[in-house]
Length: 108
Image 1: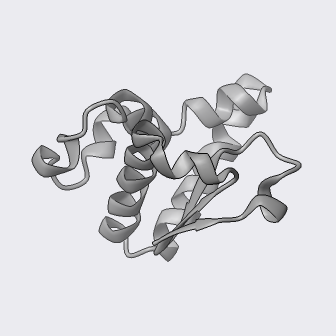
Image 2: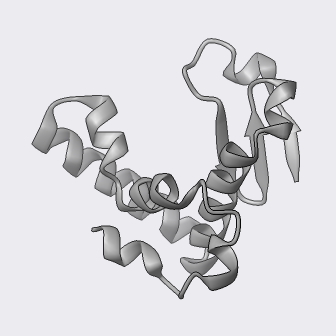
C-alpha cells in the first residue's frame, strides 16, 4: 500500500521509505515514479524474506558497521546490502519476477 507522508518526510532527503506493508512517499507525484516504487517493492520482498523484524535489525546493524568503516552516513547507507540490491535493480521492472530468494546476500 502506497501512502503519501509529506509531513513526516518533508524535512528529510528521503523520497520514499518502506515500513512493511507500507511504502511512504514524500511527494504525491512520486506515486508515478516507477523506479522509486520498484526500489521500495524490492525492500518489501527483502522484509518478507527475513520475516520483517529481523530485516530491520540486520539493516540497522549493517548500517552502523558501514558507518564505522566509512565515517560517512550517505556512504554507509549506499553500501548496505539491501540498498545495493535495490539500487542495482530498481530500473528493471521485471526484477522481482525473476529474483531468487535472499538475493541481497550477493551484495554483502
